[in-house]
Length: 209
Image (tube, rainbow, N blue to C red; front, top):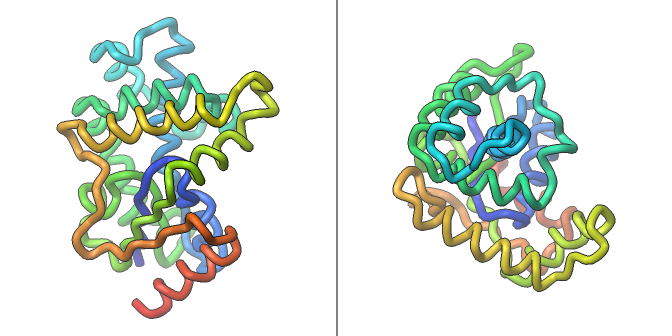
């Protein structure tokens, strides 16, 4: 069973996907972490996320087992991830990794939950269930600000909102696998939902499918 969950940053798709996988006993892959890891690798090597060669090199040599889940969650890495994710060579390098995980789940699992921005449209267009998780710009900015403010006390909601809007623009306008809702995906708007309610709604959708 393949559950594809797409949507913009800070809409809640990662939390929903992780909880779904746990409750349904499915394997889970945060595909956004792969692009964050590539962006982080470029920055760590002193490269430029806007440079094709630097981004491609980092993607082709990425070691999934070595990804630092804390280091890739900074504001700077998020911006770099959005830039490298727009590059066709990077997406091509990571596509097979994602598909292999989806069709050959680890640990003998009976299926997978993948979250990202092009799972239902490109990575797994044959997914059994597709969700597109979204929320208002203001709600997403507030959520992300709450995540980042401890590490960056000077950060404002306005700063985060500007970053999110720029990332949305890059993700939606890129030529390769742009962020878009699959025709057969079910929309889940989490703007006015608690995380518990959003997870319950997602479970209901999967159950009905």
